[in-house]
Length: 238
Image 1 (spheres, rainbow, N blue to C red):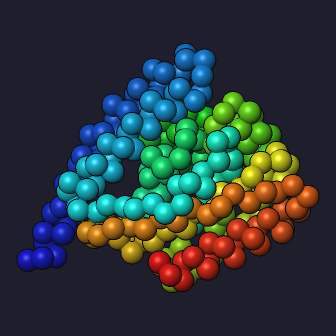
Image 2 (image 1 turned 30 degrees about the vertical axis):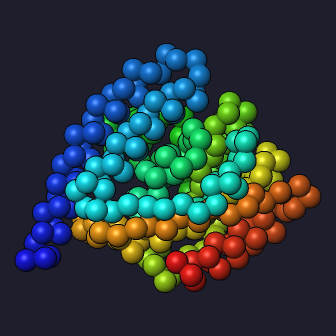
């Protein structure tokens, strides 16, 4: 009975998620004529707040944030642990207006892909190697200059709780070449919003924001190592 109720509540969440995504995706397209990318992103982030509210109502899944005082006043590169789709939604509520570095295939998704394109996300072809890094730096610098934060999941794909993926160099490369600070983020969303499962388990997701890492004088490898060590150390207590 308990499992059936969990399944029903999760299904109800997805019905609401779809109902919210369609109009907000169309809104993102309508906002394209606005000159400010920050304004467009801020409007579309209302979708994230609505989704997290609906998640709390239907599935009793909430979140708490430690370290908000570490969020800098100017745009930075966010390097975040990747366990589920939850953090792609929640980071929009936690941090200022932002864009994401993502697989270009995601832009092909109906509605959601359109919104990701409209707000200026940075699609990357992972198979293109050095060209992908060059594109990331060029587009990332542009977004940062326009007042947008850049979100990157250094592991590149969702990693199950208790596991550890390879931390790719892209985010550290962008931070180094744009002379931006890095804000590391750890969380345990994968315990409640699991990969390849529609079930959403009730509870409180813990998010920890680390102190900004000054990348001045640091090579990308060194930045990446600092981020990985901090995140994985935090994961041991989440």
